[in-house]
Length: 117
Image 1 (cartoon, helix red, strand yellow):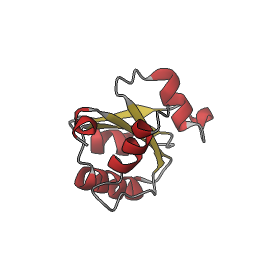
Image 2 (cartoon, helix red, strand yellow):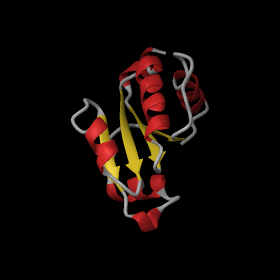
Image 3 (cartoon, rainbow, N blue to C red):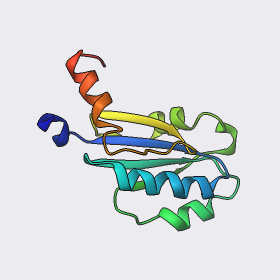
């Protein structure tokens, strides 16, 4: 497990007009993620201001506004347009909430133990 703690993960959250769910998701990630991480919010909302206003300037959170035509393709847009330097990527929908401190440690350990990519 020591090796896992040195790695960084990028958590991509796809958001579309659901700031209320996004707040819960980000809160739970910050509460339960025990390895170094960054959050990339793929924002496909009609009005970009609320999400930018809420999270712009947060340490380890980036908001990436997507063109409206990319609705439903938030992860794809991020992978094509954002430089990600972390070893791992976790993509979640905005209404996904982490509820335990090992929510990422176990999957990463399995990936490493079995040599998966």
